[in-house]
Image (cartoon, rainbow, N blue to C red; front, side):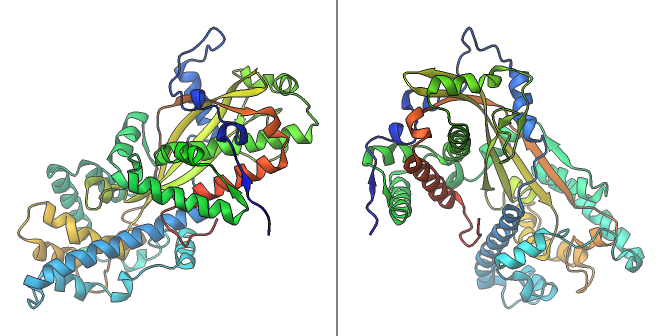
Length: 442
């Protein structure tokens, strides 16, 4: 059996100097003349509008389906005790309109298939089926969007109106709005780990590393578990960059930290481009960009939930400076969080909308509203307007403000194959820990 690698200090194994580890928004020194706008430009180099890979988009679909099921089931359980026998109740209105198959859990393959097509089908594909009452249906949803705004659902109202506007143009949020959106996401996704969460995460990571024949000490594990989820996501992105640095060092037969620093002096040039790629040109032709994707979950039945639901958080780390001290290769990173979502309507989302939004409008006429907006059993979703060519799905993008972080790695660890295995194994373990949908493959 392969013996476990006993790591004495995380700073020696992974090269992280804890005193410099999370120096966010650090002050500029005499050689550090980057302006805020220049750092923003570097952060945007990966593409100001970043679309996640297909498996992450599939994860969004699977996660939203899961949340919709939980909400509608909890709501139905509550309502059924008082309204279940009433044929005019909202619960039974929903049951008549929606086929039970539309309220089931999506498999990963189903989610992946849906991610490759427009959520409700091709825009205008059913244009020939348009009827006069569809214009009334569209107008009614416009009024409901207005009412939602008056009821305090400003963001979901804005998104609904953009959808009904039928342009399909992306909706872009500025950094201040992105910061606010991220603050509003569920506490379970963003807050520092409680003691229980620390224990759970430590056990999870330990088990994953042991399967790879590796082990972290208690102090190393404590340093990892002290980070909240967003810090961990940035940490994974920086690990990716250090791994690229390691490959570059070995590939070019670099024998010292000073030699490596000399090779990477382009990092100090403001016009040196950044590029998200794993090709052969990293460090000499462009700055590599580390990226990690996390599914961000809105608080169920909140304004943000109806506007975005589950959306992708894209954590990027880009090196902009390098220096060497005592054989430590110290690298300054520009970090930022971007968000991505596809605004579309499927049957599950529609059910979830009427399980919560109508009630929060303080309307006593939910059953009547439901009857009006359904038109007939065949018009199962707001998404039908997209297929009729009367509304159009769109993408949501946003990039948050930048921060800077100094991180360091020991040169010996860059050229040590065993340390590279530790970095890769830890990155995989943390990625799996942060992924809220467990059956989504890499």
